[in-house]
Image (tube, rainbow, N blue to C red; front, side, top):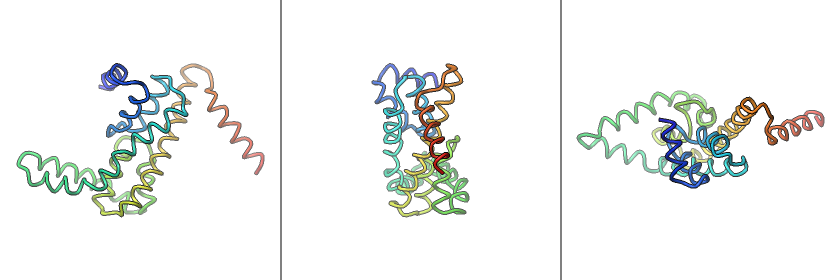
Length: 184
């Protein structure tokens, strides 16, 4: 399935739009769009990162504002009410982690780039827990940026392992880190 998604976007969209749209797909989000843009499309980081972040954040306000009315409507339909219950159950499984640490819980939930977490699920959980939209949006955005940076470093490391060469960006990051350590 991953191959078919990759081929579809490579054949039907310019590279930057492909990254943008892949970042909007639930479960894939930035954690798939960033490696796709850097490793498959060979786009530079400074182009991939902002496009993936913007693509990933676009659905969040809609989820925060509209998921509750959509779920209520789905519950009233004959054939789609199981979907509404599935969505609520998915959010219920994640809510304890978020409630335990409040905003930090939501931030960490979105920031750790593992399957089942991310901006889509974080927005779903925030909406179903009736968190304030503005606060939830900012927390999700910061978590998503953190996840994007984690995926960027991971993509650099994969590139280094595959090619045997350290990407220039990773060398510069290492130099900055060494300067900060020596200055402290």
